[in-house]
Length: 479
Image 1 (cartoon, rainbow, N blue to C red):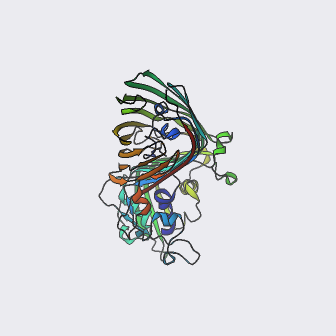
Image 2: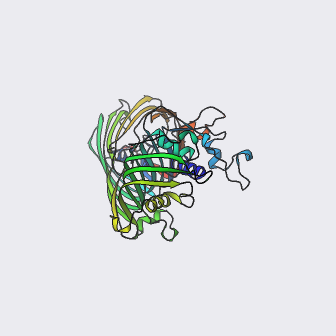
Image 3: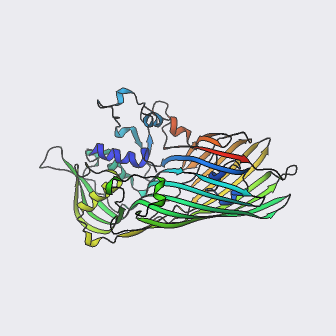
């Protein structure tokens, strides 16, 4: 059980492809192209490019306030399969012990997010000096837990065999788990409504058509449990659930016929979810005295990811209200579970949830957020950017949430290249990143510590982040 639950924990915290749109070293830049649209659609009018074709870009990100990564090898070594042999089994798989994740025990509720954001072929063009259009494609996947107790997460991390956790009654564990994977196609229109040699005020909006591929949620309103040793069977342990009151929903679309996730889902009529989304934003520029094509200060405000996906399909959608007592989960229950859908089905079967109780639909919200941005031109190509992203979803919503963050990013910007160093506070932790852009091609991270940190160098990060993109672009002609 320890091995299975530890792998599940790693799935959520460390290795999952999990949704946001940060790219903090690139998105605030006037050379960000379509990457800037996700931060604020009005930034399309501020672009230095007259034509920008995104061939492909991607981001993988995770953060949490429950565990620190303290394995003797870095996450980069783990992902690239360069783990030293002494930390491998005979078959070559990695020996990842529970103590490689160190608990942050401060008595506060815990949250964690993992996402991947794959941005497919996308186009942004300027139509004169005052109007810009964008057409974007995107595949997003996310997993998130929110407001979980330390005691419950200790069980997930250490497994049922940890005798220190035995016979300690715990109750009223209220938490939520949400996952969502979906494809989107977006159309952006932005325009300058005030423009002269001294200032520019722009407005932009993006409308998105959403195709929901798979999603799940568990909103727990109350859970009382104990860990017990089976006196009838040696070395057997189980969780005694005295009472549970929760809502469970998930889809089985990917399990059916072994489907995979790709941008082709944009055109798949069998997807169990459909929805609409939108971003809307404003941008204000105060122009420099010597160059009306550049700004001394730019301010941006936007609300991003308004909307939701409704999952409604008798074949693939499950939803149940749970209110039961006296249930047991043993060490073997999750041995054959595959992915989050498999784990959800184990819970359904163990709690005797019948098809007659299946509501067969639920709605999963997008990670709606407030986006504030201020960019100061320091002169000679140096800029200082401040970014604030604030989650706007309620704590009990069936929805992925944008993790609230504050970032300050010094940047050196030239048309041929750019360098940025995002300094970020996320989940009450400080992170430092770095990015480099050569023309429209870029590579970066908003959490460099997470990429290189391990117990060996004592960095012990609480997450990781990496992004990269390949594009073709031409600079806008000056008037």
